[in-house]
Image 1: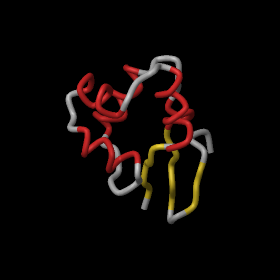
Image 2: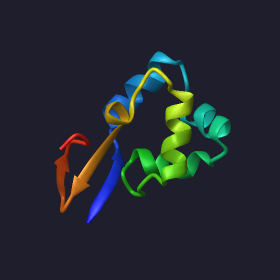
Image 3: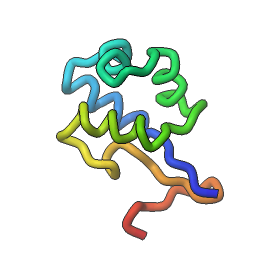
Image 4: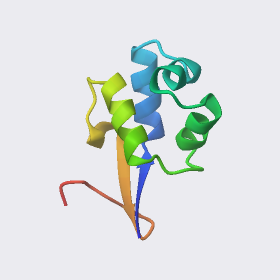
Length: 80
């Protein structure tokens, strides 16, 4: 099974560089702070819509910068 997860370290660096808090980004993308927190902590998988909204609000970053694709528990690169 393929899963897409947020790259927490890269995401937190991106947020810090933009001086955004979880609450700020959650408000901008129309999701609750708690839902975003679950995504950041790996408890939930980000939906395609949420991934797109995150990338729209962090345009300096690509999908590969902020997300990790896992297949059967192992990381795979998007270009593989």
